[in-house]
Image: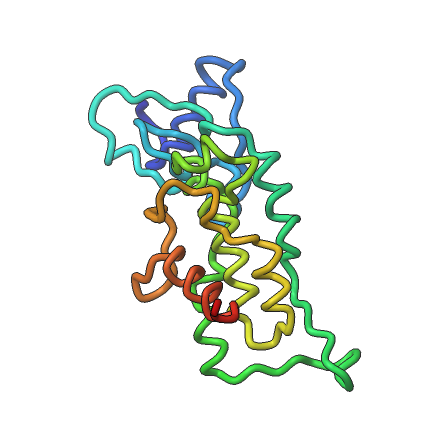
Length: 197
């Protein structure tokens, strides 16, 4: 792979251009911001455009992600991933947010929906028709945590207890400050429920 760029995606492009034109893969931005080149490289789901070939020793096997993406996009659609703030008197006006409330969202909107985490999650593999998986749970929490959104309870109800279909609460996705996404989301879910007498 002489005269090749430093990322796995560069090597794949070189192989396609010079060795095997039938090699097929997705790519777009080449900067780690679109998620198109997500694949399994040497047993780890990652983005080919940010995986250095210098981190790989010897031969490596490259596979598509171990799941199709269509269900993930359907799940994403199901959480209504947009601001729902029908506050009276604010029609066609800006929904302001304090700097403190905005900081609570730091990291939550960084997910590029590459699906590397969800397709690495055994609970998602076995229950993708019931369990949203880490990527979509992170996106759901992003809207639940947004102080401008006034549909928190409806969003939590729509999740229908995101842990009821999961065998484990040890998923791969994390929110800021190292708190497990599931712990954070579960805490929000429990706080919104009336205590049972």
